[in-house]
Image (cartoon, rainbow, N blue to C red):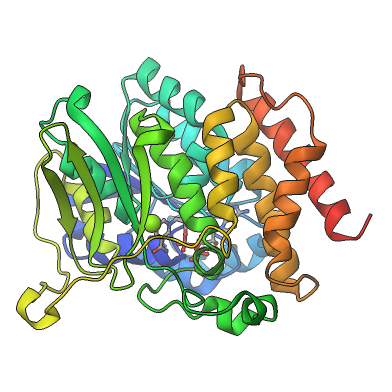
Amino acid sequence: MRSISIFGATGSIGESTFDLVMRAPETYRTVALTGGRNIARLAEMAIALRAELAVTAYDDCLPALREALAGTKIEVAGGEAAIAEAADRPADWVMSGIVGAAGLVPGMRALRHGGTLALANKESLVTAGPLLMETARAHGATILPVDSEHSAVFQALTGEDAACVERVIITASGGPFRNWSAERIANATLAEAVAHPSWSMGQRISIDSASMFNKALELIETREYFGISPDKIEVLVHPQSIVHALVGFCDGGIMAHLGPADMRHAIGFALHWPGRGDVPVERLNLAQIGKLEFQDPDIAKFPALRIARDVMEARGLHGAAFNAAKEIALDHFIAGSLAFPRMAAIVEETLSRMNGLGRTAANLDDVLEVDASARRVATSIAGGR
Ligand code: NAD
Ligand code: MG
């Protein structure tokens, strides 16, 4: 029986993972489930999967979790350290589905058991790509990408010679503001930014899709995971979200990966890898779809893509600072204290104010220190200082 843990179980990725696991619960032994403030849902999932441990990220939610699981044999814990400790419990397959840089430490710790890390938390690769990949290598662990584009690239590359890869193209829906003028984007509201046209996702990634910071993170993720040089990685706008990525080879051929906009495909692929298993997603009817549309991204309207290019080239600790500043800018936009286009400006200014980002992170502490100082710098810029 395969042992599993789900980090960020109550989120959008976590729910999709739970859905797949619940279709064959007898196949899995659940070690740990983690969540945030949605205690009722976390407890419900822990009971359904007979988890050994349920952890809330927040200390103040622990009494409620304890109460919800009273009378069961499920252990409970709360707080950031408890989340990391949950990753110290060995599991064969671990879903890294926490949002933000908070997903980095548990993912790193889970890799030490040498199992499989299904990596939805793109921030891990953006902030600490080389360390993460090296930790996996050192412990014989496997990282499988669970981003629709990266799972698509992974699948298109299977059995191929990396030396023959000319380019990797990740697609972008373009988000809700694809056809908006810069003036209109300047006044975008939270509700408008969250309303993604083709994917149903958590609030933060939905807004990142509207600003194209999500695609910016994914460019860096592609560079770090596949080790492909930045000049070979392209973004193509594809509003239908049917083609998730394309890989072009030296003979002019292109392998494209198509599928419905449902993360259960990428999660299911990671769950069944190295084989394939049935996944209950809608099957595409291409005749009904009729035609596929593509266009170039508008870099002037979505500067996140340009900033990401610089980060991909510079590497070192730039990704950690980039992501932290983006998270702070996003917090301010969600709180209503920042105009939508200011997010990119804050990220760019944070990067320009910080020194020493060119050095390679020697360890996780280096990354966490830069993350913390970039948050301070971005907070002061957002506050007008
Ligand atoms: P979400 O907001 O729906 O869920 C996030 C989960 O993380 C929740 O369980 C929440 O309780 C937990 N969490 C939040 N802050 C935490 C913290 N500080 N410490 C511990 N746990 C915390 O997010 P999501 O949309 O499921 O995205 C999760 C990750 O997967 C993100 O990195 C995102 O970029 C990536 N991803 C998501 C999708 C998608 O379709 N949702 C697609 C590709 C990649
Ligand atoms: Mg994606």
